[in-house]
Length: 423
Image (cartoon, rainbow, N blue to C red):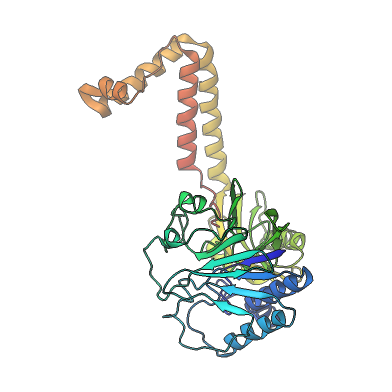
């Protein structure tokens, strides 16, 4: 038996960050959520799956266009003709209270109710599917604890939209813990709500977030690709759990070092080359958020050239490659040289302190006096209570470690930090 598990389709939701993308290429990106769902149905048919599980947020709220629902139903009809059963648990974005329009879904589709957990037993497949939909957008109850005991002699799977273990960056919707799921005795928990992939196994129990089918903005970077989870069983237990990539547009984070470049054209060409190479490696269209780093003569004048750099990228980017935003993290050439000289001098002092006791003593006295000034009369006790101590001139390794730590802190405050992409 094969089971396909997907979640967070958000069909026809707008992809953010596309203001600079125009024409036919923009439409290619904007239609990505539909095309990713077509890929999901194609995969189900190609793999001859028996069951498709959709763990919530099929839509992004009430439909802007009735054709959204018509499209979804027509794709499920393709599965009905091949005998594929579909089970849907509503989440917070497609809760009953959020969707005012409806279409008739094919006979192969079961949408779980919101009054209690429902169980559908399919003896021919040796499968029991348990699920619960939500009727409103805000749910604080831990509904995982309401799921019934497993059906004996069957593979038991549960479909639930939830925030497991309070994952940061996602609303705390229907929260539950790993222990809540692990102790129910089910074989597979098909979860939705969190848009990043997660697969944990506890004995014979698999707990899986497949991630969303299609990234929708620059915070949904996924180097391995967005998609769904294909589950294979031998009739008695789960034998394989695989991630299958289905996205049609990949969001990327690219860093480009423009050190030494003083021409706008050179910068444009380097950014375009880096983005095009990254996009081609994915085998699909890609939208990149670019962070430019390095010391450049254009650092001070960047604001005057930013529009021209962004406008010039289009002619140099390869087909299917886009730039969503350029984040500047550059330095001025002259200032960078001065800072580098300063840190070179500091490094020299650190090296000398390792071998010169008098210098270590001078540094320890200076540091001690400074801390005494900051912490006051009870400074020594405060350090001791915190489990800390100052190195002495007889501890060259301790002095060196302290100086290196201080240098790193200083460098972090003086040199511009590089933004870390959020997923």
